[in-house]
Amino acid sequence: MINRLLFKIFNSPLSTLFLHQMMKMTKSFIVLFFAGLAIAFTSCKSTEENELVNHWRLAESRSAHRDSIRNVIFNAVENMEANIDSVRDPAEHRIFMQDLNDKRRILYRNDSLLKAQRDSSFLMISVNGLYDCNLLGVKETGTWKFDGDKKELVTKPAGNGKEGRLKVLRINSDSLTLGTDTSNCMIFYSMRARF
Image 1: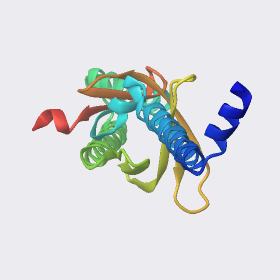
Image 2: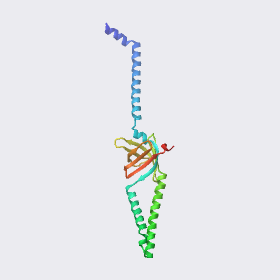
Image 3: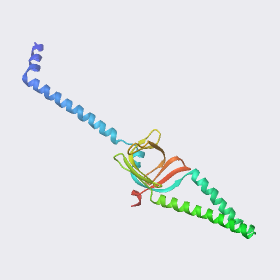
Image 4: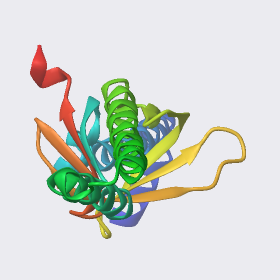
């Protein structure tokens, strides 16, 4: 008796319509649930990744190799300046002074060029996964992502460029340090923090 009653209830046109509507709602709910999960997971980026999105200006560029060469020339200039009076022969003094002035010019040109390049250098990292930069005279655009496990900024230049990786040595809302270590790095300040 109960079986016949249940059979009539579930096989009636009204119950079939009701079940059909419930199935549609369940499918819609499942789709919305998974869409919500996908949005939640994609919007849960790490703090570091969120802080990377910014307009950065280069404040300092450190290169152990470049800095060691500069230091050799700088020390040579200092040593030569300390010993100017020890060169007595006029011909040797003229050659000595010419060499000293050449080294001074090299230092001045190098420092001036580096300052000009640094002053025009920037890195703009957009929330849409694109970047634009001019770093020490090298201009580039492309896509970026953050490798949270390795703490690296991964860039892929537009076209057929090779993927690049830089360690994020330090980051906060005001500054960003990218490089391999503290003696080979670029230190940026946030343009957003300057306004």
